Amino acid sequence: MFVIDLKTTNPYVNLATEEYLLHHKTGDFFMLWQNEPCIVVGRNQNTLAEINHDYVTEHNIPVVRRLTGGGAVFHDLGNLNYTFIEADAKDKFGNYAVFSTPVIEVLHALDVPATVSGRNDLLVHDKKICGNAQTMFHGRMMHHGCILFSANVNHLTHALKVNPLKIQSKGIASVRSRVTNIAEHLTAPLQVGDFRRLLLEQVLSKDGNELYELTPQDQEAIDRLYVEKYSTYEWNFGFKKAYSFYKDTLFPAGLVNLSMDIKEDKIAALSVKGDFFGIADVAEFESAMIGTAYEPTAVLHRLQTLDFSTYFAGITPEEFCKALF
Image (cartoon, rainbow, N blue to C red; front, side):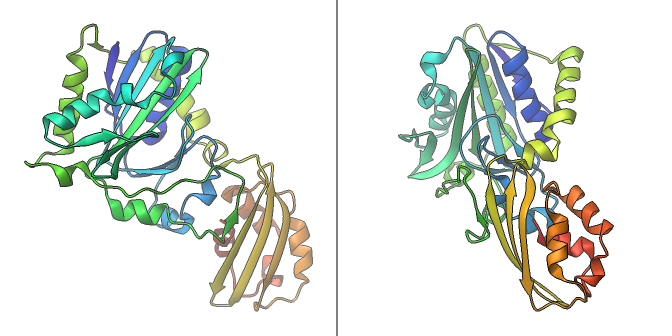
């Protein structure tokens, strides 16, 4: 098995690397990687229904969609992520324990009583320390896990906190678990970098495993995936299933109650109520927004093409755009 100790902390590049290894390489791979603070959402999720958009925007937290299913998770440099990619591994699909073995072995050596849950988590004293997910592509399987070592739990809880009344979605919703950091259960202090080294050494100690450096050709293909797919709004926020969005925003100029239906990533219906002031009929505004692509750049551009102040006195298009997400 080829072992990659990936140094970049760019979440878009890291997930692009996973896809490249799964879709375009042969052989078996193990990869260790870390992300700068970000949110990673599951393949089948409605991103806007999973994140606290205002908090994410305020703190400039990147949001990226992965290839596997499951729920949304918060990553930072206190997390350590690992990925197995194996050919001809259909018989292992759904077997989370076999891929968790190196992590369990290292934790047990550190006297941390980690166990594998009945579904897809690693636990310490019934609290989650690692979530796992899997996917298949043309007979090749990818299994990855996100280990909570010393993650910022405050960011985790706030960034993924969303008002359940805000969005009614047909996406796959996250199931929140009680979580804990491994660092809290160690008998002696250890940094995440030390834990990463121990896990890397554990994997390399197995017969047939060797370090692999990405070639310039590998990196060129990964960068192309990063630019053309993983850094795009369409991939990370796009959601083809229809859903509804509700939000109340109190502006200095008045309260605005928004209700929207989104279909095929476009505004299909819009209703605006509230005690705001305007000289034009807001029904004209509602009609003018139908068909607009539901992503911030397109929405703001459309707002700026309208005589916006005639509908909403004292509110800027930029402020209104923020309220639509």
